[in-house]
Image (tube, rainbow, N blue to C red; front, side, top):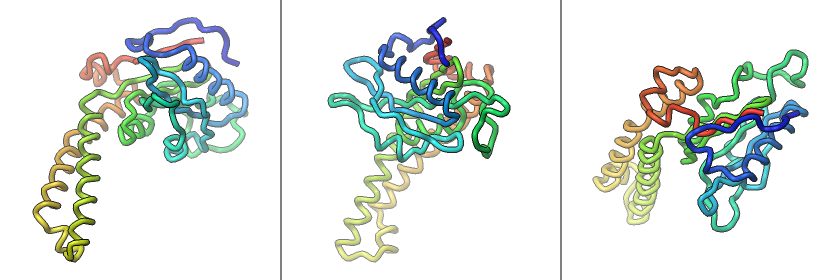
Length: 226
């Protein structure tokens, strides 16, 4: 069981509401008792990070992206991140085999960071046993990923429009208007892919030297110990 809070640190700690702490703690308690992965969406509401109110059950140590993103924030709030609780790796206490060992520490792993990048959720939190650690993905990575998504959606819209105008699919994909949009999409892909991969790997490995290159983003956004 998760006990009384011993310390709360991190450069973004004041942005979290008490409801967020309580929800993450509750998910961790369920994870420890049941041996399953649980997650919840984090929302920005009136200047504070609050929970969405719905806890999602994961499987095999992972949190299903589709199930998480299907949850909604309260009216007037917007999704800003997510939390994933994994049970601690104690011999004999895991009820079913996992395809890879649990992370030995509660910080997010590489796939957690990439899920945040792809979903445009910059705050990624993970918790195991009696500790929660959150990182905030650097703004440039999120901005470049947002631009990639925008150009990708616009290119799809233009492609459908060209086909409706009578172009064949092959002709439409060679059209200068479509080609220019796809070119811009891939330009932004190249801008964020390398840094995102480097950042995700550094967080998973807790490579302090690599994380130092990201300034404040290389330090935990939130660290809670019970």
